[in-house]
Image: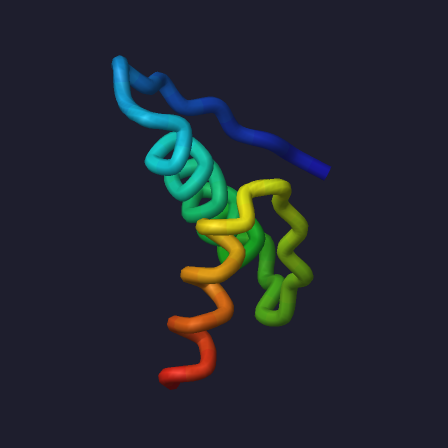
Length: 56
């Protein structure tokens, strides 16, 4: 499989989770995956992803 790690400073949890999601998507894209299923426990982040996805 694979993995990644990021260094974060003192920022809020929303930004940390959003950054982790972004890095995970970049990782998946680099591995050739074009369709991924995202699971998270942050309802605000999930809502933002769903809302932005519907706009496109």
